[in-house]
Length: 316
Image (cartoon, rainbow, N blue to C red; front, side, top):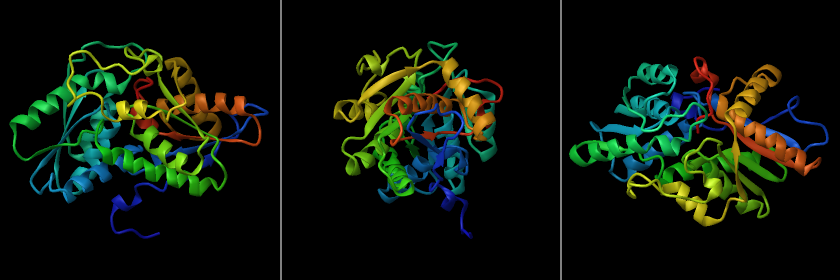
């Protein structure tokens, strides 16, 4: 295969059947190793989609700086895609993320700013919560500076559109009915986009969203706006998804279960994936046991393990 740009390698990741971590008398479980995207996560898909969309609309022009609030993967993807397309990139992260993530972004040429985390967590972390303060900072910068484009991954429709394409890849690659799709929610784009694509073809497919067990505002208990935040930094894709009724349920996964399954995926299946991948596979295996043989459960492995080498933590 010959390509003219590394950006052409984004997407079209394979679909891999799990063989060793699935229990007997279960449905088949298939995973999309999204860490095979160039910068190591499924966020490459949304980075290129959001940037190209903004360019077409005249919102992002040569000489502009791209900014974003991120716990890691979107920041890395924007650092990679943005610098490849000639933009300066600055990422605002909550403190407490692994040092590897910062180093990767800096290696791509981005500037990384860490902001104090209002309420830390020793366990799993919901990105939609801990990114609130960094979003507020991005809003302030955008409001007071010219030549700034804030990507707004949490509310940008291009995020969801990118993963409608992911869903269509799954349909084409599996070649059979998808009975259930399982994925961590994060800012919602992956789950909502794939769910939309699957429901266009399979009206009865089960859509299961996952969240960290230690979330302060659990979606499993109903959508709640974070107090003190405005529309510009809250709501967005998650709110649209929850109000759409497309989810069958939202369930919690503990940090311990996510880590344990991610370790099994590496050692038993040879999939060098991160901790959110472990959470997704953990629940996919449980759903597969419930559905039984003759059914298909699909999930994604969001990112590469290289950003979890110093600390293992389920971060959506």
